[in-house]
Structure formats: C-alpha cells, structure tokens
Length: 229
Image 1: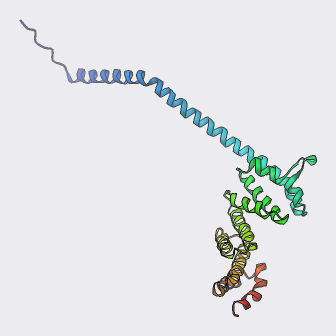
Image 2 (image 1 turned 120 degrees about the vertical axis):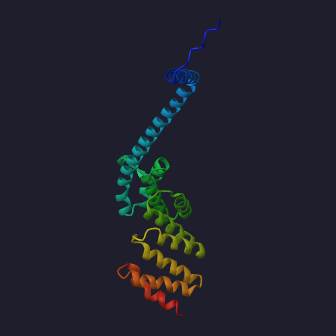
C-alpha cells in the first residue's frame, strides 16, 4: 500500500527556499570569487593611484610656488634674462626650468605667463606666443593675460583682426579684472587700424562711462577724435 505523501507546510517551504537561495548565492560567490577579488583589487589600485597623484600634484605645486617666489624680485628689478635662466649659485631656479618641470601645476601655469612676458621684453616673441597658447590654468586673470599677450604679438605683426578678437575676449573673462579698460582700449585701437571707427568709438565710450579712474581713461580723447574723422 502506497504511503501518503507528507504535506509540506508553508513554513517548511519558505525555509527550503531560503536554503536554496543561500546555496545558490554561495555557489555564485565561490565561482565568482576570483573575479570579485580582482575587481576589489582594481578599485584599490585606482584609489591608491589617485591619492598618490593628488599628493604629487600638491607637492609639485608647493615646490613651484616656492621657486616662483624667488624669481619675482628679479622681474621687479628688470632682470628679465636672469629670471629666465635663474641663478644656480643662489639656489634660484629660472622660469624656463620651472615651466619645464612644473608646467602642469597652477603655479607652473603662472610661471608660463611670467616667462612669456619676460620673453616679450627680451625680444623672443615667438617663444612667448607658444607659451601664451599653452596656458591652461584656471586663474581668470592669467587667462586674460595670456589672451592679451597673444593679441599684442599678433598686433605687432599687423594681424589686427585676430588681435581685436583676443583683446575683446580678454576683457570679458572676469568683470573684476583691473586690466579690462586697457584691453578695451587696445581693442578700440585695433578697430581704428582696421578702419572700424564706429566700433572703436563704442569701446572708447564704454571706457569713458565705466572706467573713469582707470589709466586708459586719460588717453581717450586723442583716440575719440580719430573716430570722428
């Protein structure tokens, strides 16, 4: 005589499902353990690499900052070539080496602009142009300086259209930049050289209205007269 099948209770069924799920997860974990551990290992490597990188960037920036601080007095006294080359005997690293070694840091980006300006004064405009083009820092004042510096070089080559565009860009990057009236004045002058008298007058009138205490304000009348002829 066949025995009657034992009826499984809901509780037993639930427990059975839990046991089955547990073993399925255990089997999955055992089979995937190597991949999981590798995955955690990759994440750990990325985290460590990021920490090391950020520490290096911070240390490099601090090193560049200390070097730039030593060069500033040379620039202030007009010793531009010395500032470019440095003074090894006095442990002063030149701007060129600072840019070569730390050009990817914020302080290195500052050194680029200082080096470019020094090159302009020492007659190396092409080297300066390359540095202005290479600037990629986040400081808005330095961005404007790079654009205006490049514009000045192009203007000296009589490439007035390109210079005009760069001066105008430089003037709108940061509305608090004290050099904005100077950029606007140079943009106006470039317009005059291009024969754009109306556009030049608008820029000169902007300086006259908004920058009454700025140095370029004192030069406006001689340029405004040229917009009327």
